[in-house]
Length: 127
Image 1 (tube, rainbow, N blue to C red):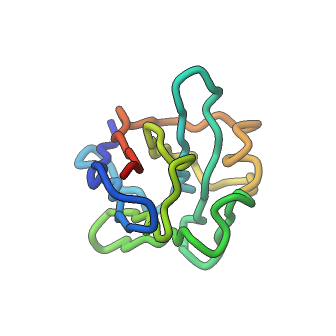
Image 2 (tube, rainbow, N blue to C red):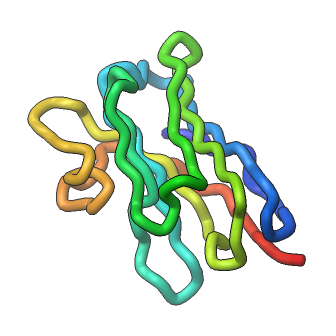
């Protein structure tokens, strides 16, 4: 029910901006997380943002390179990815969790399973 866009092929050191939106409901009351899954690996949380947008969480390997943001008026959440590395290659998913009584770490660690998932968008970092 969530739709991701913005993936593609980029060279190492390049940038991409992923978008996550839905037409089915308002995202304004949801924590939104970005997750990724590489072939043969478990899905991992990359970054999460609170429903207000005031609080963010990043996995250590992307700190300083990725920025999560949201525009609630556009019902869209973004993941700006800079200084991309080959190890960032994955399918990227966004997910939504109702923002009541949870922390961003709960969502990004998937100890609190999100309520909705997108289908994913492929990001490939290669020269």
